[in-house]
Length: 409
Image (cartoon, rainbow, N blue to C red; front, side):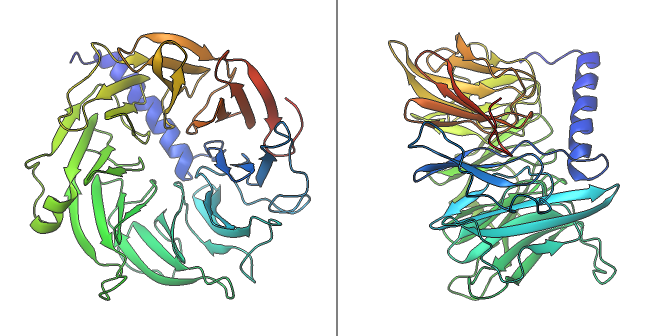
């Protein structure tokens, strides 16, 4: 594949470093990357300044003025990047804020009934940054951090994977934490008693939850990629898919990795890598046995999940970085289509058959969050903090709500 000219590559790298620095405290973070979540009769969203709100699905998208955390008038959590997680009747998530390089992160647990905190003392706090979303399994919440800015934390770790006990009758306690040699900006993924997460050194870690054998927090295996890993991996059919900041996307066989141990770094049978021309941040999507993923230079690829071969003659293209996950929907008379968020402006749409560009959605603002399709509607959270609800059939905007206060936009 043709590589970009050195000047364009340099511009891409500079822009990406600017964005990444903003996420970890070198610049003031501003949030706006939290994706909407459809659960039950509501759509939940993390507002840009750090308030969790929701809209009703049954009343034409009406803002729920009686539900929100923190309550109106109270200090908010700080900029939100990670998407809230709904687990039964509970909402979990994380936010952080920085004063220059001094950052404070908060992990929250809320009731879906009245948005009250499930923990007696409110949030769980750490002097660090939490960029990614949390993962929830049973009564454990998992998340990655940068280094801990605490004089009592005297180790050499530059990042951690934390596991919190979320007993609703008590304040959360640290079950265990796994130290890494670099900050973690990504989101953990849990599968079959193992949690997977990447770090900025380009190491993908597979860490045991220890549900039956007492091995909680112990690394089972790791894989060294060519660049930093910040995307949330995708696990399906025994493989784990993820990209990095060396323009490379990977498919690893989990069973082979577990049997080979930490030393088996080279790609083996059934594994592959794909060289693109941009860095990967977006979580990949698999739909109807095709793999879709975008890059920070706006290219959107369709790949064979078994071999990594490109399925389209040319990738789709949006103006702006692709940070959020794409969403698939049925296009009347044209088969499956893929909606792709642009960090700069508007939402592109491409045919799953050949990547041909179709009519898009006019967001009139950047979208760095993942897109959500629910029935005949598409939801998007813009970097201007607008929660948009589009009618898929005609691409028209159904409602536009300010995510923080519920006002029309």
